[in-house]
Amino acid sequence: MKPAALTLVVAALAAALLIGFISEWAKPVIKTNQVNYQEQVLREIVKAPDAILVPFAEPETGYYVTRNGSAIGTLHKVSTHQGYNGSIDAWLALDLTHSIINLATLTHQETPGIGDIIHRGSTWLNQFVDTGLTDYRYTLRRDGGDFDHVTGATITSRAYVEMLGQGLVHARAIKLEARDEPE
Amino acid sequence: MNPSKSQALEGLWQNNPALVQLLGLCPLLAVSQTLVTSFTLGVITLLVLVWANAIISLIQRWLFEDIRLPLQILVIATMVTAADQLMQALFFEMHQRIGLFIALIVTNCTLLARAELFARRNRLGLAIADGFWMGLGFLWVITLLGGIREVLGRGTLLDGLSLLLGPSADHWTLVIHTSPLLIVTLAPGAFLTLGLLVALKNRMDIAHESRQANRVSDPIARRKP
Image 1: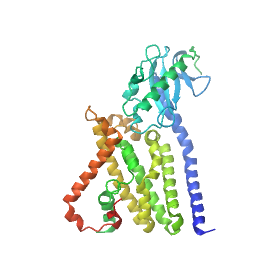
Image 2: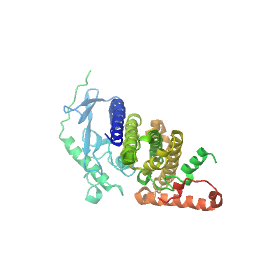
Image 3: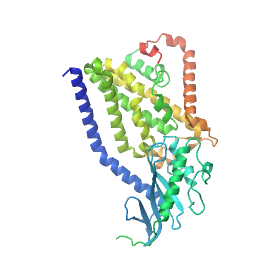
């Protein structure tokens, strides 16, 4: 084999090995980060420190939020691919009337800086607090709905609002019942 | 002037990768919306640049003509992928915010330019110093750009610091004013702000021209990009 070709093969192998090792080390750490992060987000949006989260029958899609044995609300995972790039995942905390108590974006790949409007605690996200399907239409005002978009981030705004609307419709179908707290 | 001092001056000012070579514009303009994201991307670029320069300097005798560019890109891409993984492990929330642009550091021409023009023909120590000073040159410009754009475009400073330092830094965000200029946040504002910085630098250089004329400089630096 020519020395140049051999060098390239050796270098590629070395690079693959290095990345392999780092990735093996990082994978469990990243997994833990993701789990912790989700837990932190859920705790934050439930706004009730003593609440207990009971997963839905279909795991990873949501939780019943219970306190002293009775349901006080639900958590729903919503996601969309209509954004600028990749999928947007968020969590909704709903009360018993299916109104939004709070919400937070979990992961997204929208343009950094511009897509920042959907970050946890942003003013734009706060406009959805205390809204529900009975009184609001979940499309942008410019599309005939009830919510503002952010100039420069229309696609992200639209995707997000419509994701919330669909999530709420979906949530309405889920039967709320008092759940026993697990031991 | 001793070599390390001239290298520092080259990287930070005379041949600054962002202000003079105008390399790496994609991350420079795209990520510089706030001071914290700019600073983070600058630091990662600096680290990757130092490591890539070091490795390329070490393997320079195997950089045969036919495979030189692919091999350099391989080294850079490996370093960037490693940085991306490490950042996900160590600064998860920050990665959520600017993760998309980490991979783009591969296309930051500053890295390939320093590998091609400097690291592959110099010994390890010089290559590392070059990576460090060039990286620092990129870092200060992107941080300044991010700071200016954040103040003008959003009216805040240090927003998002908690992503780096934990929740206690949430209160460190300074609210400077409440009449943000939207255009500064958008892409045109990035170009305008960088343009103004370049103009300011040139203005300062003209004022010091007589002093600069005597300085020894990398011949590459004189070549227009």
